[in-house]
Image (cartoon, rainbow, N blue to C red; front, side, top):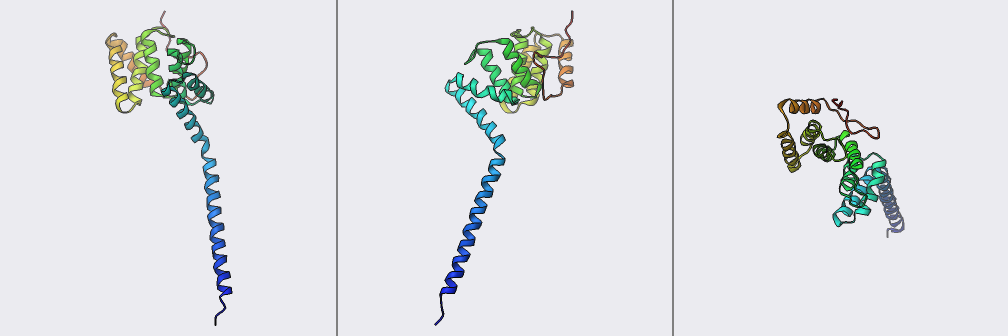
Length: 196
């Protein structure tokens, strides 16, 4: 008769080793997940802010966006600017909206570029300037995708209908010379020199 005890012991060792390997794999997965959560946490905060906005909880949307803006989240600048432009959850303040849009626009956010262009078109929070409106709307149309691109292009064409060919050329030149930046000094709205 064969003694089954050593076989059972070996089988138990194999099961124990397999269990340890599974636990180590699970721990590794948790560690790797924690390492990558910094960007996920930011995305979650932005998702929470947009969800709050969608529910009509503008105060919460503003509270969620403010820390993201402080950390330099490109998309958060334009979204918070929108809240200030319309007085949703924060006081209505065109100059603050313009500054926030400018921060997002300078970093390359198409929504921020379009909204800054529309503020220049109407002169809300910034001086009315069709050339700068055209520039920012041109950049927004160039950087957007899908239906947003078409909407921003229509806005650009609407502004262009109020401009001379030379002004349109100037707006196109400004857009062609533009490059995104990582940081924009407070109070900056645009670098175009003003004509006296």
